[in-house]
Amino acid sequence: MEAQRLQEVNRDRARRARDPAAEAHAEQLLGSLCRDRGDLEGAEAHHRCALELSGQTNDRLGASLALHDLGIAADASGRTGEGLALLSRALDLVRAERDEARTAIALGNIGELQRRLGREAQAGASYGEALEISLFHGFRRTLQLSLRGLTRLAIGRGAYDEALSLAQQSLDQARLEASQVAEARAHGTLGRIYTLTGNARQARRHHDVALAQARCTGNLELLLEQLRGRAEPVASTNPHMSRTHYLEAVDLARSHHWPAREAELLRALAGLRTAPGVHVLPGAPARYPAKPAR
Image 1 (cartoon, rainbow, N blue to C red):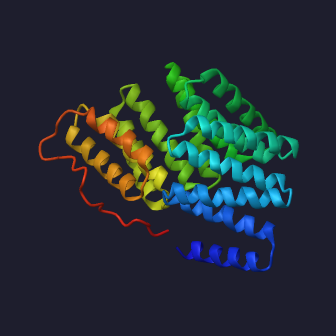
Image 2: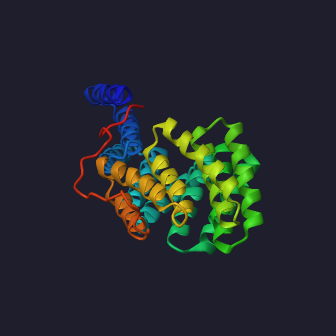
Image 3: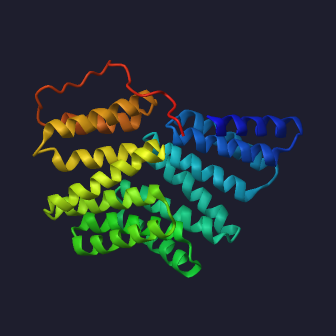
């Protein structure tokens, strides 16, 4: 909350000074802070303000960043097709500005949305281009993002040896950049691969590490992702534990007003076998504060 107050002060100061560039920067940061805590409606409102202000100053890079983050928020709200269109507009702008770092970021995220929409060939091309740019320029963040995307595609094809190699590379890169968020995701992916290949012990180890790291980051989306990742492998062997993790994730999504994620989790929860002593209470109060400490 301290970071939010600081950016609100910066935005108001820029507005009084009639400095649209500084105001757009503050609005963009406010949008990112909102998204991190699951306030997608607030995030979209701030990013739209940033987009409008960037247009006033003809700041194409600022506009590309606002479009990119609007696309991410739209996808998180369940509007993946709209999100892909927004990210594609952002990509056009950064290509025109010859900004290779932002081009790689946009391509990596476009690949993720294409994958979610079932466009595997397009996703592979987007991830592959992002990986090529990242390797050439030494962009660690986007290298890790591209590796994660290619890993997911390999899992989807059942190419588990390839997926394991890519996931381990992703974990190595995450450690090099000292990114706990990226490391948690890599551990979660490794856990999934080991689950699919029947190595329950290794799967449990990686999922436990991923969930513990996710709890430390303050990143709501990551925590929801890893709670689900921990719940899925034990759905048939330990439905009680699985439902407990799903219930925590549902509770978090609901308390942070994230309906798309809540619906996904409830669908997954509904598919589990009934576990004694665990009940879904749709009207139950949230067990978490609306705005977690950062």
